[in-house]
Amino acid sequence: MSTEKYPSQIKYIVWNEACERYSYYGMRSILVIFLVQYLLIEKTAATADYHFFISACYLFPLLGAYISDRFLGKYKTILSLSLVYCLGHLLLAVFEHSKPGFYTGLALIALGSGGIKPCVSAHVGDQFKPDQKDLLKKVFDLFYWMINFGSFFSSLLTPWTLNAYGPSVAFGIPGVLMLIATVIFWMGRKEFVHVPPTGPNPHSTSKVLFSALKNLGKGQGFYGGALIGHPEQAVNDVKAAMNVGKIFIAITIFWALFDQHGSSWVLQAKEMDLSVNIFGSIFNLLPSQIPALNPIMVMGLIPLFTFVIYPGIEKVFRYKMTPLRRMGIGMFVAASSFVFVAIYQYILDGGVQISVLWQVIPFLVITMAEVMISITGLEFAYTQAPRSMKSTIMSMWLLTVFFGNMITAYIAKVNVFEGGNFFMFFAILMAVFGVVFALIAKNYKMQDFMEN
Image (cartoon, rainbow, N blue to C red; front, side, top):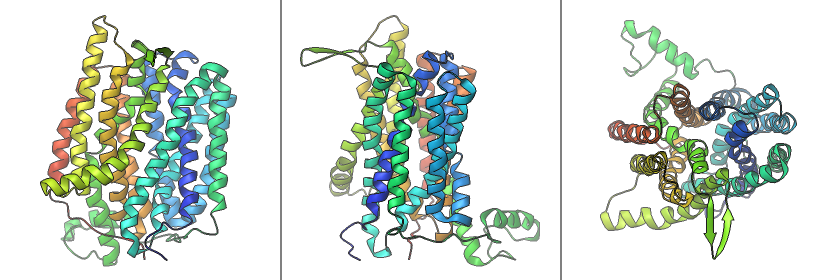
């Protein structure tokens, strides 16, 4: 197989991802506005529910990874949970006036989208040979570009659809795209590399950890050498996962900030002047259309960072932009974006309405942070995962999004901080955890686990 070109089956995965992300971000782009304007839920409660939903989407990767790694394999797990995903979209379209029915649809989408997340990311990596390592980073860039290709159009069009045709159509179209995504993925079934599941494992992560804890008093510490009853490879794999988990701890706060561009930032935009003068013509934007800035910026920034900024820094400053360094710098960049949003909120709370165009600045800054942290995290999670734990470690990466959104949901629910103080709190929190990340990453030793 040529090392110069992507494997032919990659096209099915990336186009599946583009359609799936259209469906997911389309429904998500109007979720807060729908909860507030149609189900008449109070703003802080709607913000909390939005982040609880995202949290669930990133908790179910644990279930999906377990089913995939141990029993069904990635392909069957993705296909079966994609059908659950489609059913969830159908319920959103049907139960626009029923809170129980609508929330049931959200639960099914969380199960479907969450369950396939670690499997899809790992499935991409499985299609490459060890001598195609250089292509692996590029395919994750392409993978992420396609995610944002789908996200941009859905974030732009779905709010307009809601405004023009109502909730049923606005939620129904993303459901159709999810069905198309499922069909595209099914079409690649004969070309995919299918890494078989390991089956029930007597040396699973939980069993190795339990044995380590049980034997602590016998002088068999987890990091103290061989562990009786388990092969050395199984113990080493779990050690690798634990070490990666330490790195992921500080990443959780990034997601507490980032996903607010679809909730608290949208509600801030609702308070701003949404009329925009473009070449002499006045356009009235919708608050939930503003997050479309993020995916279009991502599509431009990915090649800029990959081919210009990272190589430029390494060449000019002789400073190697390793994955850990990229993620660490990205955390401080993310913190600065919330400083801008906090300042805007202080101005708005003072009775002065400003143009929504001011949000372009923090959107650009948070998107730069996303490129440095999220894309790099996908690459890092796959390369640092032993073969038996590819999907599991991918799910650990996605679990950082769960904890981050739970933090935001809790802060919004208890309503401790108001106005600009709410945003400034997150800016400070992110900066603190950026320091924590640097201290943890300093002692991490990079591994290289590529599929044979």
